[in-house]
Amino acid sequence: MNYKFVYFFLAISLSFFSCEKDKKASLDGNAFFGGEIINPNSNFIVILKENKVLDSVYLDQNNRFSYIFKNFEPGLFRFYDGKEFQSVLIQPNDSLMFRLNTIEFDESLVFTGIGEKENNFLIDLFLLNDKLQDSVLKISQLEPDEFEEKLDEIRNQKLEKFKSFNEKNETTEIFNTLAKAKIDYNYYYSKEAYPFINYRENEEQIFNELPENFYSYRKDIDYNSNLLREYRPYVSFLRVHFNNLALQQHFKHSEDSTYNNKSLEYNIDKFNLISDKISDTFIKNRLLYYNMVKFINGSENDKDYETLLNLFKKKSTNNDQIVKASKLVNTYKRLKPGNTLPDVTVINKNDEFLSIKKIIEKPTVIYFWDVSKRYRYHLKDVHLKAAELSKKYPEIEFIAINVNNISTREQADILQRNRLPFVNEYHFKSPKKAVELLAISPINKVFLVDKKGNIVNPKGNMFDIKFENELLALINK
Image (tube, rainbow, N blue to C red):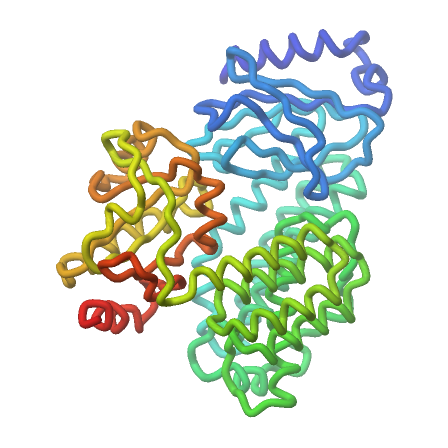
């Protein structure tokens, strides 16, 4: 047990609670939130709700913080430590503390105090779902009936865990809704994703072979849940759900039989379905924006950009997102093949500032990596893939650039921890500006440039089966 943390919690509690016998009464409907962060990524914590920053709280000399919620609506909040986000359920009269180590962010997260049981249970469900992901991917290759049977077993395992918790604890309606939604929407997500990750046949044939009641839960979906609008299982479900609905709709009036997320007609179907089924402006706008950005990052046709952007402007009511999408379209127009790579400043392992153009002396692949936990597998995978391709194609230079606001020392430590060499490694002088200028999203995109620094492909993917053909073309250019 970490006694320092316990003493800290007690000290904070005493300072805020005038009556130790009745902490709930002393908070008078407000809520206390605090914590301790080991190996902090920054010196502050950002607290958000509905994608809006409520406050920033600085860590003290012991990497601890405390915060009081006043006159607030109970529900899901998020905290951000500079690199990672996590959700937390805050209810009236909660006095909630957490402790985490950023090296194992989610796995180390433990809550203490009033509200601890509910939040620890939700984190356990989150970790259990991560643990079961490989199993779900494996069973997704089974026939529909067998897949459904195995998936039901996984869901029932979670439901039993939830039932047992409720029998031992007095729970609130909000908690019950969140816990049930985490179980249900992860289950729904797997069923919606099934046609996209099953490799037996094309998607149209898979749809035709699904049992009649395979998507029977769809009649109960709440597309406008105020409580769940920022809940990861719900948001993830909506994304794949509309991919699925749009594809089924697209097959009805096209000659396509396979999924092509770069198809303009398919994306128009998706935008129309989102607009028709969702009335909550926050959920609708965010889902439209997510798909707009995804299309821009995937498509290579300028005219298609403009067509879908015009539709996006008609259907979205979020001016900030419209401006961002318009900027991204203009960015990719500047990143057309044949144009010169934008000049950004990078920093090498000797802390020297260099123009990115100066380090390009032969045909080059520029790839990127991020230290955030959600990209932890990408960090290793992309470096190992680059090393493999570099040996195979010595005529091509492979350059890695970190996109975070970190020092050269931090960059070296991260690479060392992952047993990766500090060779041809850089980071940006101004990461935020560079990421925007080069449209580095998703993180797995790579630039192929010729020896003069001219763009050959601004949207390469090292893991694409056609990538080596692009390398051969780059060598022969």
